[in-house]
Image 1 (cartoon, rainbow, N blue to C red):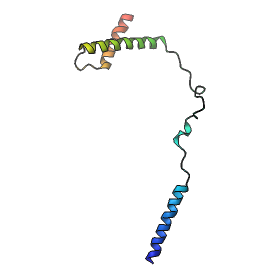
Image 2: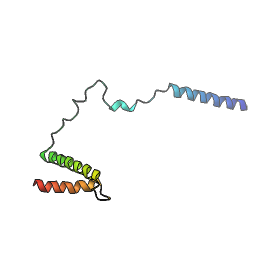
Image 3: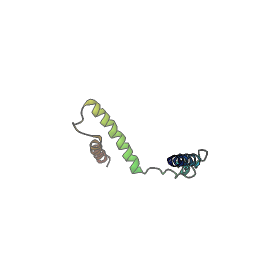
Image 4: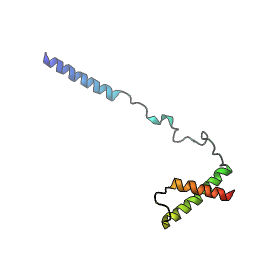
Length: 99
């Protein structure tokens, strides 16, 4: 009866394949995202205006970034100096002159 066992395995494999094909697929992960036609503006939080301190910090950062680019292009940056260290020193210097 070796033929019966092989036939049974083949039948089971075919049944399994049919079940996989006929089974519904899980829903895509996009179900948590809003529909493409819906407006997200009603659910989004309104943007807060920056505080005067935040505005001043952004201005200092822009000034320091411009100085960094000029000094780096001219080769005046110390060897091993990275932007965070330069920004820290520049920010302290600009805060001292503003006060």
